[in-house]
Image (tube, rainbow, N blue to C red; front, side):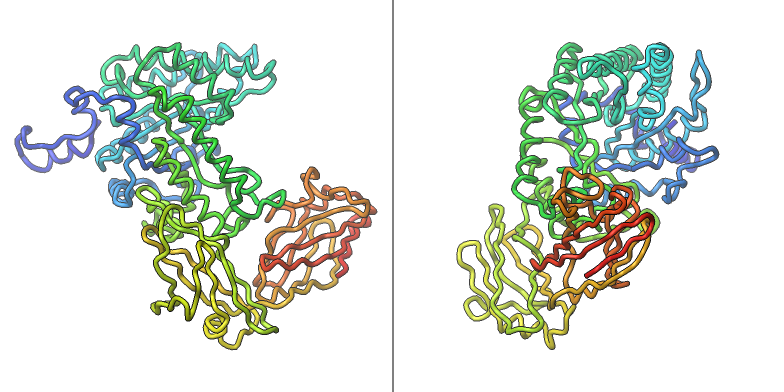
Length: 565
């Protein structure tokens, strides 16, 4: 079971009393920890992503199917070295489970899961395993009367086998019942909550009844869909109260305010509403659970797929900084979702080191930010002073740098309260000939945390040109001239909203439209034209980060689309 210890025993005739045996062999000897102590010790956490879900969906697929290497013995040592204290290992069991009535899990799959769990424990990490994509593959069918009993039988058999396999493991191994489970065709929220409670009760009964280390193992129960609406938090709180077990924790997921996370509805910045919603989300969980002695794990967090393209960089860095601060001050443990997007598992390094630095810095301190990380300087007119508002976040301004050169207060810049004014002569000097697209970078340093980068950009008015295309794609030739697209509005001649998500005029970035700076084009996509009325004319308003707007007319006739500047 514990392969590393066995390899040591076989390699040299050392005395058992000298061997530091990890994981299961220590389960019965360790001093029991409270649920709150375990969850606190798990902060911060990281997700192995879909590595052990990759096997769920395609015949013959293994854990490399989604582009990551197999987990080896040294992998979690590197994760631990990055500062993480826990790892969530999502596992999908369904496609490796035999038929009724036994629903036997493939022994090779169970052995591999056990091996990876051992690797993580041996790296001094807390580990959380679950039933993952099983949620939408078959657990969701619990709401269908003709499948209810079958689903419960498979669910019970799955957790019976997991509990028996890991019975003697230490408390550092945590069980999470499910992942993002939801139901269709129910009578409403009350029935949804009843079904969740049925699953959670059965999970709890099976694990506790299996004995050994499972007597006091931390069990993690989720809200429906792992959402944090108050009605769902209250339902889970009632379930936990009914189970009357001090070794329970609650879990939710958080991917930010949806319009911000995908850049739709004009929410281009991490604005006051986005911040307030995140603060309320944390506070609701504190009030419902933490304040009553029930620890909370946000088992997945981040922004939605493609956010690094859709959301302006400085704005999403603000989100991660704020999220980490709220986790630290609320006592909620968080586990960053990473399916290989963030940590390059081949190179064993972060794909975006600065983003990770913001996240890891937030574990211990705040970082200062500003109203924007973009300063646009007109390439064709006289250079003028530029201002940004600093978000000190409880820190103090320290200095302003250009490269390794410390700029001089009064001479190069003026700080009045939180308003930072950068003198025109500095901007002119660092931008050189001011050719559109020329960039330079200033660095605002604070008394703690990460420096805030100000990207100074020389830009002139962007220009869109006439184009022809089809409903499959319209490529609009665009001279960006150093400017950058924030969002695009689409309206019909009568002022109503055009395109998908017609409850808003502002379209979803990289879905309804795509920006191709290298090719000098803005593409209106098939997804956009699929929701545009044939024979209609649509006015596009392209909003740029400099504050410039450009109107453009698109006419659809059948499959043919014409664009006019």
